[in-house]
Image 1 (cartoon, rainbow, N blue to C red):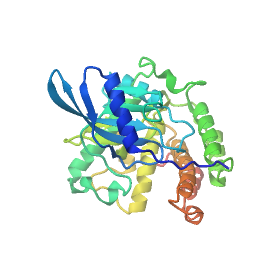
Image 2: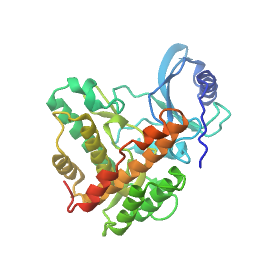
Image 3: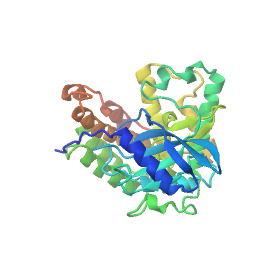
Image 4: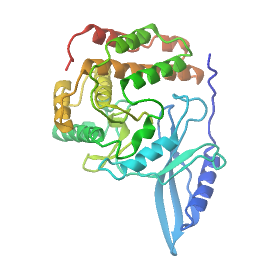
Length: 358
């Protein structure tokens, strides 16, 4: 059984460390001061801190808004948290049309604040919440159906833009450090993850779904491209015109078929709709979503039912780990976790169906 470490960071210690680091790494800035930090309400995968820094440049008083991304304090959702990989990917994407926050620096020397960290400029805009769901309230509810539909379409356009990038010319081979990219590697990676996340005892329905995915693996495999990994409205900063201003959270990025991202987005949006009881009036249904995405991508999606099973399987594997952390941190009891419906019924329904379920 994994012993889940419970830790909290001293924000004042982190603030002072960032202040020293900025003074050392940005010598063009004089008298750098970091105001008290603010925290983003995120989950167990990482920590995001907002920092307002003041300084003098060429004799003029200035101010900047920065974001620091840190690995979780103590145990998290993933066995390791690779900020260097994320920073390399975001830096590569700066030269493309995909909106990202360019990393100002990534630090692996833990002596500054007690851990590695990445610093980025803060992108202005708004985000949609998952907790509570953006479908149950929030600023997008006050927009017209036409505006909601435009936001949805712009999101799909950026998603297809990610998948159409020439990942080899961008030098993104580092996203798959061992073995050939593709579904064989992804199945192996996520199978190993579930073993780790479940302390070696994966739920029966997830083990069954993995066996089904291996048996029914698409052949031929769709074209490979950059996969965002966690595509969703809550991982986007939307600008004043509702267009995506920055794509966030690249921690699950890999090289694989575009269908991995599309199926993840649709499966977990559909789950949110089912839990909330309604969708945004301006959002298209899944058939229209897939059709619009295919037009943006320039090719039909393939084997969508298989990719939806694999997407739910990956998300459910992460949930297994999160549930263990919930119990360890006192967020939920063993009994409450056991009562969670999970995704077993959805997986069984998909695996027993025929066709692509568009």
